[in-house]
Length: 152
Image 1: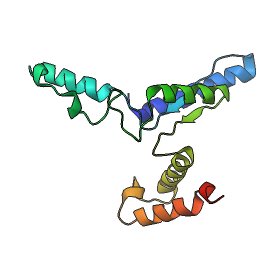
Image 2 (image 1 turned 90 degrees about the vertical axis):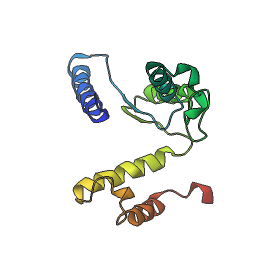
Image 3 (image 1 turned 60 degrees about the vertical axis):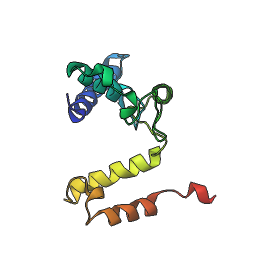
Image 4 (image 1 turned 120 degrees about the horizontal axis):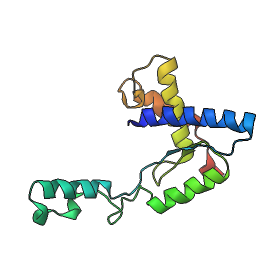
């Protein structure tokens, strides 16, 4: 299942559960966790399995994997941080849980999402923030709209 399909399914599920809560005092809800960069061992396990499948398990070097829980990347959160943040947001009854990481805060994530919606309504190329014709405009958009918390 793609991320887009999972998002659409979860949004539809929450719509139906919300209707059930409003009309029949239902108690269930759904939430959509969008984790930022997370130090997981998925790549490590995949690389190890590929080496095993190729008969090279003895030669496998865990350090060949860019990052994992055992070798965390500086910008990524650990899984326990993601879980703590998710629980905090669930307690606030949030549906969209946009989890930050050490490189990207919630405000920047929100600005990226806002820009991406502009790709659709302004008929820009997909992923325009990386497109050479639009990257400077995206940078300007972020600079203009990002709060100046550090200036206080």
